[in-house]
Length: 74
Image (cartoon, rainbow, N blue to C red; front, top):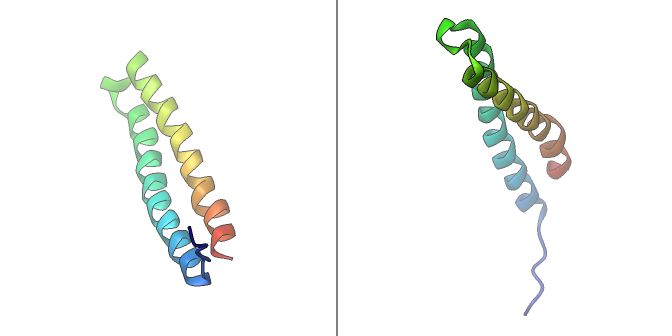
């Protein structure tokens, strides 16, 4: 099998895709985490679990968007 070298453009393309997907996920999860606490119908155990899950996912997406993707880009 032949060795395929990755070019700088490949890294930049991957970083752009990671940033775009992570940023959209970050915004969506922070919106869900915020609005589930404001809705009276979500003030139950399911709403608390959904808030906890979306907060964790939002933190993960934020780390990927603003910490990991610049490392891949460079």
